[in-house]
Length: 476
Image 1 (cartoon, rainbow, N blue to C red):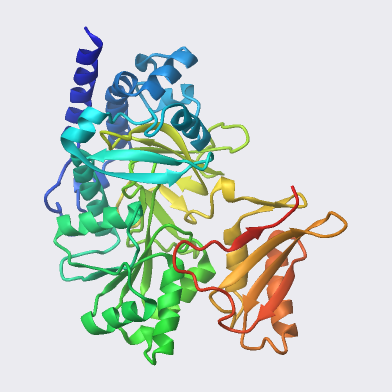
Image 2 (cartoon, rainbow, N blue to C red):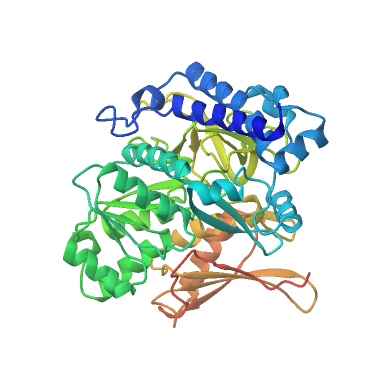
């Protein structure tokens, strides 16, 4: 069979497989679950779906992506070697650098997706870039079919975290290449849930939208949820008395950081829910909250959508798969895209997985404790390794400390690396008690003595996009 015929045949088979398992697309199948037969499928049923999709996916990737074809050949594998979840162990995980190297060799799109110019011109939807290790954006082109898959997947996730007709969602993001926002916007339209866009407005204007139009769901980054609540207070209004009943977030750790979750829920008197995903692996929701998100032990749990993606945890040092119940970093095999299906892409967030039944009735695996931070965000200070979310938990646990804080890593004259945490507090003129409390909260979590500076309120810059709280000025 000529190459062009093989490409078209494998694409046709792949799209038929996607369509076969797209159930309850137009409307929810029940009051509790958008797609009951998938959301509550048995573990054996989920595995069978994953295996069938993988058997159709690997030939499609081989024939339609030069990146995957060359990788198969380099590894001495054929598509027939990977036809099940168990077979994925034959395939070494793909990291961001490998994709970035492919982009440099094949600008401007790279060859790691299955979209070519013909498909893009015929039925393209949009593109989303993400920064790479080279500094060049890794670009992912998506088709109209991808858009439909997004709408359906995100509708299922939004249904799980409580979105229903009658709600009004205020989506406060700058849009641009923000995959979470676009996916939410299109899913809400598919569900018939009204959405008020809040991009390009000042914080005061956004607060006025809440007061005037009374949305029930406030959807934005965690740092923006804090910012808007404080601005609302400065305007003389109590966020707790507004119409907001659900805080919906993504892009930064929030629900899994107990002190941040409690601060946000207390500020707004509202429930915090979240999405989890990444641009590279079909950036619809991969993880999502459910009605039983808060466990009896105080930790949160986040479902991962297993009929659409295979989620694993690996050891970041060895790349070996981590057994259930042990901590590792996330790896995603995406099976829900015409253009950006991926085999074992390293997303890189630390968590622990649990396949036990959930109280909500969904059977899909859960990330216990949420996602605490990406492996490439790891801070190594004098041999002690920790994540920014651990520092956030400590800072937020001290009463009276402001919402903004900053972490500075530096090197002293003797060549010793040290860390200073800048916080805001009303008692900045007599800071000893605050200073001691923050130091204790941090040192008890990371076993290092930390320098602390207490600043007047409103000293540090207000966060308007994803929070960048760590400044590393150490001498390399």
